Length: 409
Image 1 (tube, one colour):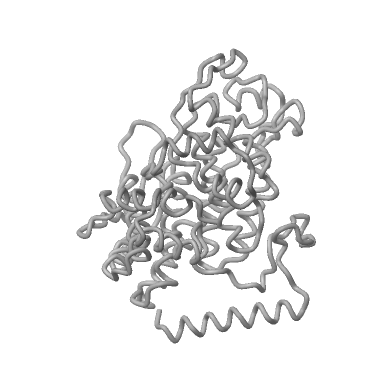
Image 2 (cartoon, rainbow, N blue to C red; image 1 turned 135 degrees about the vertical axis):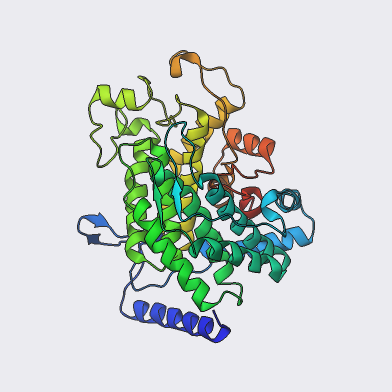
């Protein structure tokens, strides 16, 4: 996009803000009264422009990361070195696009599943490298990877299509956002082609969620939806993602205030006591912070902690405080899983006395807000995060969050 066009876009956005304020139209962020829309609380005024870059990482956060790395400050410099040494940062990284990405749920070989996720992560990695180093070759590489896929991809198939699409879309949206608003070498044709791919091959797969699936699916789908919505300036999809967050997070992480049983997932047929206990992998005793997949393994619970924080962080950058609505639940879930991940004895009532301790690099974003912005005490999460640093990538949809979010309020 040319500099003049970007400036025009920025001025139109500022004008929209002025007009919205003058008409008394406001977002509901941080506790405001947003009114109702078909019975669903609206997240923000549709007239207000999105803040860019604003998918997971803001411009101010990127600026702070650049300053930390330039000064060789820790933990950011070690995290930067980790990212720079990864395969995703290679200067000769070559995309491997597929026209159809087919990801079956069983042992049958997939087509393009790993390649798509890795290429999206590589685009995001080069977008971050460009913003940190100023080396335009990294921005050009990110655009090259994104353009390779947008020239080829048409659809996702097989039963894992929704999850696969969500994993890749989260990274595509972050990469595109971090490049589009900081780099002037992405041509209009390339940009429009990429936007078209996201609208046609990604957004329809993720925006409705998957109510009957395990909750990590639903949450990463909402993570993808909100990122795509901001990049595409799609207010309706943003509202969908926010509504999805507000209904699925309480149905995934338990608090005693929910009652004797967890909240049923909205839109699912999982409603009875027996159905809920089965859905929660046989768990019959519920405690603050327990997740729907804790007794499956901590890895999937950890995915959901990351996705929850990603959604709330992107909304935060857009003036919508989803953290405030879920801070007690998120804190309880982080502390619960961090405690057992760090080796605490597992009581007999929890998952039959056995848990699978395999959390990933998923704590930085939530810790940054709860401890850094709100000043809450999360001793178990703080210790676990220190042990995991630098938190790298899970090769799915989480990447370099010590670098981008450690103490980065």
